[in-house]
Length: 180
Ligand SMILES: [Zn+2]
Image 1 (spheres, rainbow, N blue to C red):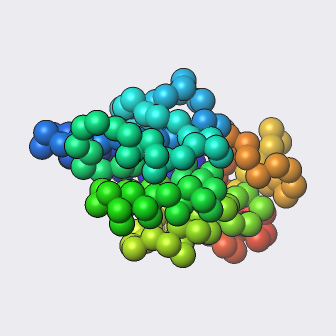
Image 2: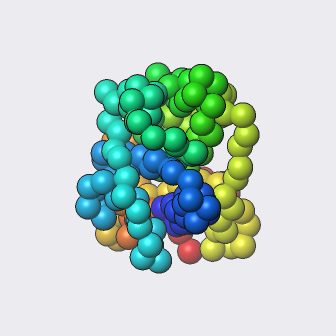
């Protein structure tokens, strides 16, 4: 998705490292577009990353690391389970390590992702990464389109892709199914 959230994640992680601090990155095991174990942005920067699937206990992982960690970053946070969102809270509350999660709030059908839903509830702070629809309005929806550039209204929630498959739209144009 083209909101530039991965770029923001990598920038923030870089800021920590530049000051000699340690960061740990996670991304979903679903996203293998740039190869496993990497978080990469469209402009070409990337960093080594751990991956999580629905069985990963991120709290236990972080607790087991035997060096000082200053920040944990999670990309594709929409794919977290409710349990994993609570594990991230434990990292903050019990280990005193900040966690920054980046994700989409809804899928291409306009339904919430589990991870995003519980992050909305449990996160201390929410920051919107703003994107613009083709009409100039704020884009808040993520539409999926097919090879005929028609909006897709059915299918599995998890279908990894980038700008060849997804587009950010304002609510009006998402509802109308207009992509341009
Ligand atoms: Zn629009």
